[in-house]
Length: 133
Image 1 (cartoon, rainbow, N blue to C red):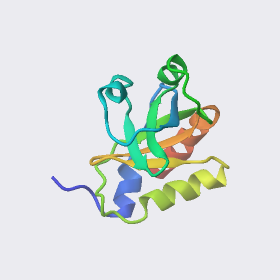
Image 2: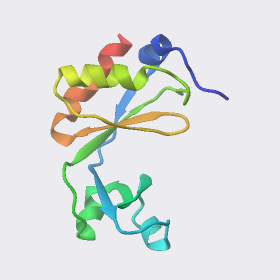
Image 3: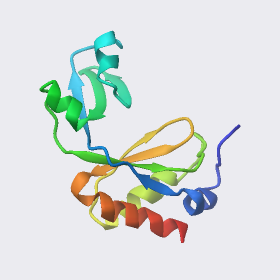
Image 4: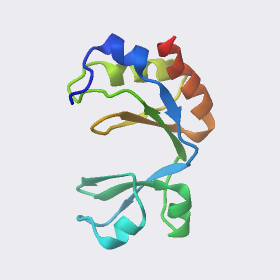
């Protein structure tokens, strides 16, 4: 099943859902997925020349003494967006920019996920919900 491409439909039907978990982005010097990394239960990984970025719970990061910056919350857009859709990330980013909220977007196969600073998560959720009204 292919996802929705039309930007107006995506914005109207995206149903943002806030995850209660506090997440962080951290990087480790590793260039392959290992059993130790899997045990950390990352919700996302990305390989860069500096190492592997992990998106993990703050609890896991603290437990393993990983360094990180901002603490984030994830807002999942509960609409099946196509990876070929144009404008969804731009629209979300523009709306959050007006509220001075940073956004880190990760697209899964079915949904987009927006990571926002923990202390601004409720405002970010309200901002994104405005698209669905």
